[in-house]
Amino acid sequence: MLDQIHLLAAVTVLGVLEQAYFFLQVIYARRLFGISPPKTSGPPEFERVFRAQVNSSEYFPIFLALLWQAGLFFHQGLAAALGLLYLYSRYCYFTGYRASSSERLTPIYFSTGVLWILVGASALGILHSLLSHYVGLNVLQLLTA
Amino acid sequence: MLDQIHLLAAVTVLGVLEQAYFFLQVIYARRLFGISPPKTSGPPEFERVFRAQVNSSEYFPIFLALLWQAGLFFHQGLAAALGLLYLYSRYCYFTGYRASSSERLTPIYFSTGVLWILVGASALGILHSLLSHYVGLNVLQLLTA
Amino acid sequence: MLDQIHLLAAVTVLGVLEQAYFFLQVIYARRLFGISPPKTSGPPEFERVFRAQVNSSEYFPIFLALLWQAGLFFHQGLAAALGLLYLYSRYCYFTGYRASSSERLTPIYFSTGVLWILVGASALGILHSLLSHYVGLNVLQLLTA
Image 1 (cartoon, one colour):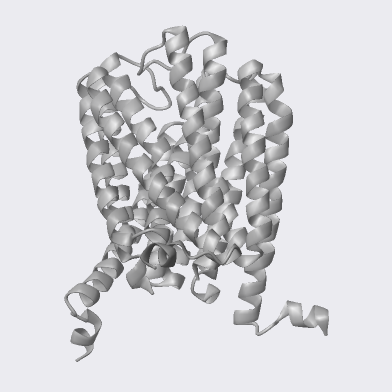
Image 2 (cartoon, each protein chain N blue to C red):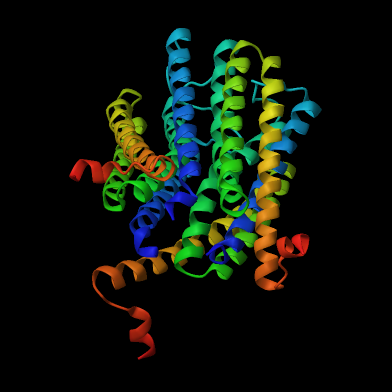
């Protein structure tokens, strides 16, 4: 049974490692610019790193929720591949945002696009499960009939 | 097996869509008040929208955790119905907070009440599972005996 | 089947209760120092309580993700025990941070150490599942042969 979720679990742990990397970058930026907790404001160079981490943290539960719904109800391999793509675009977002506010835009649009594909896959898969359970309608059988 | 979680999965995806709506409102408010990232401070009208999104993001993993425990260990349909109620009260909270700080209060109390019911349902369901597994005590059998 | 996750579910609900406690402390600190939402800045005594809650909220999805992967792919009892240790060190972090910025350091290092153990357990368990499924390599059988 774990076979049906081990790719999702692997991408989940990779996502956690990425979050750990972002947290470390904030710690380094705090040291570099001499901004001790609980302060969170400082020069734009610091605030960009800080906001990049906060934004990635806010999206992390959303990403996990979609990764797992798409993987369980649509296709594990596809969901995991999209998950890797999301994690890569989040990394580009982080390094882009650190360089300048405008360089965060392309990767954030890309990562949002990946999330919308995961929304679509999840919605299709869940809808199929709901329809076949409550209406007795098997869409896949209809398509291949 | 997916039948036992598809309502929870559907509410999860609806919750993600609501979070996406909140993120969009912050982007619109940033444009309206001319507050570019990484800045997060501005007039109270902007800060209320911003804080409403941050608060909703902080509660999102808590909501999902309770939705799934209550759905798995107590009753899927009830958990999903409470989940919809929570998402509706979060929407009222967001639009209320945007209007004024005091208008966020009623819906936040209501949404917190829904979460406490989910806590209660989860705790009862998990306790029942733990008792029947470790003590061999089947509470449901006792009640109907 | 719920037997295989009920300890993880119990620790999850305890984690939610801890988060609720942290949220309440921020509400009390807001009243004590007269800082009404949407404001989040004030005297260091307030900002330390506020940042302790924000940091705990950011780590909560990471904690849950690791708790469940370690519990599903490595060992439920061990993951739940480490989960309790994490929740206890988070409590020490919160009360320490409230007292002074430096008193947050020991418990945050400890809690991070617990998370890294959960990362290691998750990674080992998932790797074992991936290897035995895709390569047909059963590491446990090799070790006991």
